[in-house]
Length: 277
Image 1 (cartoon, rainbow, N blue to C red):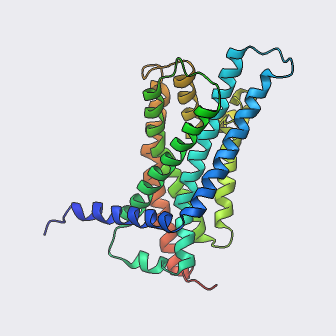
Image 2: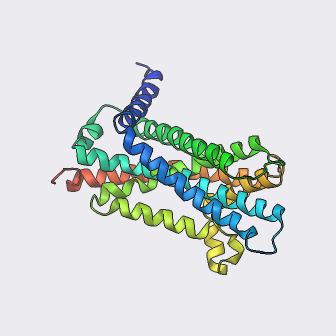
């Protein structure tokens, strides 16, 4: 009998729908989370615009460039951290609700399960980033006169595959350590924040950290998006970043699925899926 190819897609979308139903149920908390993200982003924006105050000898064009650069870093960081959080927190929620064992026993492939959650995380993160970007553009007097929005969006979409791969990897942590796993996810995010040039160029880092930065997809994503929005770079100029990000996506997603499978088998053997508190 030939398997119906539609069934895995329907299964994946059912997990996506389940996650959006959780947002609908907890919309007030989601609004507060969005408010927190917006406040953090605007604080960085006001920090950049303050460079032109108090007699500081910085041209308006330079202030505009610095503001865009910092806001791009903050927005991308918000997108990345939300993507990581949503993928990893799902495991914590299921463990808390006591449903994770039933999910893992369901006649659904793990790939369909994970990709369903990934679709939700991508759409949710893009919506949050888009809403934040809209408010930021209306708030700050910055010009995107040379911006190539299409190229910037293509860079972000290409980078999303590698971000999802890393997100799948870190979602293993709450499985292995329900008490502290989610905190370690934050530590992984902090490491990427340090080396990826979110708030400063990686050239100011020590040499060994610059080598580490080349392993982070956020580094190439920021380079590409900033070049597209500040200098108006097109896809031809962004080809090196796009190729690296595509390669990372091809490598990280299968690696993430493999590590998740290994962790699932280990947790089942050791009884770590049982909720005891």
